[in-house]
Image 1 (tube, rainbow, N blue to C red):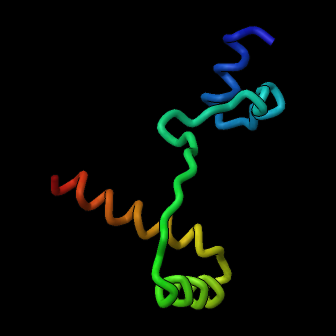
Image 2 (cartoon, rainbow, N blue to C red; image 1 turned 30 degrees about the vertical axis):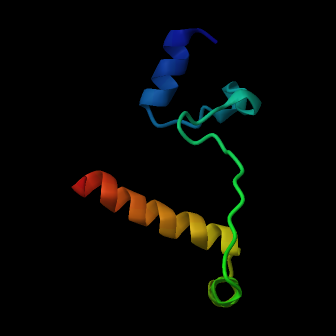
Image 3 (cartoon, rainbow, N blue to C red; image 1 turned 90 degrees about the vertical axis):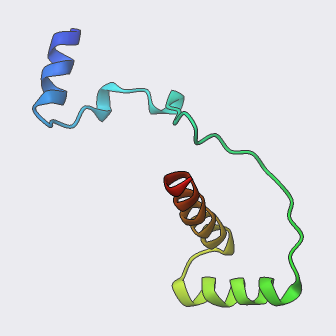
Length: 77
C-alpha cells in the first residue's frame, strides 16, 4: 500500500491497524520503571480494600492517585 492510500484511510477514519506492526509501538514518556516503596500496613490494607471495592489492583489506584496529584502540580506549578 502506498503512503497516500494509507493516509487517505486514516483521514477517512478507517481502521488501519491491520497495516501496522503494533509489536514495535511505543508511547514516549510512558516507559515503565520499577521502584520500591515501603508503606505502613494501614495504608496497604486501605489500598487493598479500596482496590477490591473498585475491582482493580492496588497498583492501579496508586498510579491513578499519583497521576492526579502530579497533574495538579504541573498545571498550577
